[in-house]
Length: 163
Image 1 (cartoon, rainbow, N blue to C red):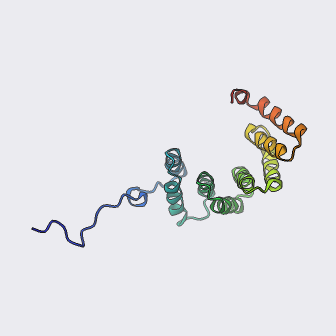
Image 2: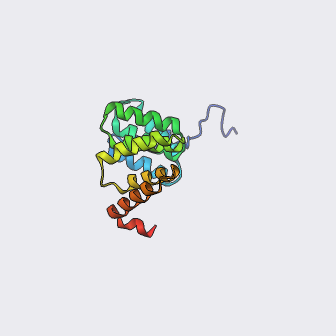
Image 3: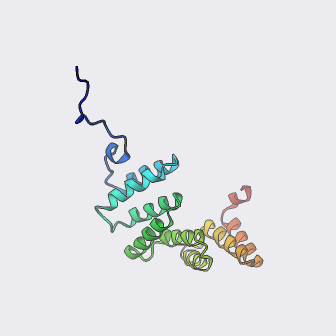
């Protein structure tokens, strides 16, 4: 008795074959962040890339791709995604912040500072950007600027004191 032949196909366990792709940004974000939270950035990247194949001019998808690529330390993918998001929406502050993170990771500290300063001018009440600017000031050994940025961050978010 023959149990299986060479044409028998086993079900694939790949994410692409198990998922029905969500059609809206909120569901996609939840799916991708679920992958990221489970340390599966690669699967999240594949999910977002598959959706972007049909609609490359979707700013929210580009932002999510950039965030996941940063988590996976795929700086070229993140850079391209944030650049594309900025082409779609030049005022996309999340892309500006993401570019700063990519630049900082690459050791491009002056460019990162410019990106974070641009973000801070658009969203001055964001404590995280002041922490980033403080860290970049430390790298330059500009201690008064670092202290000023950290103090601003603490004023904006008192929870930072407990970290």
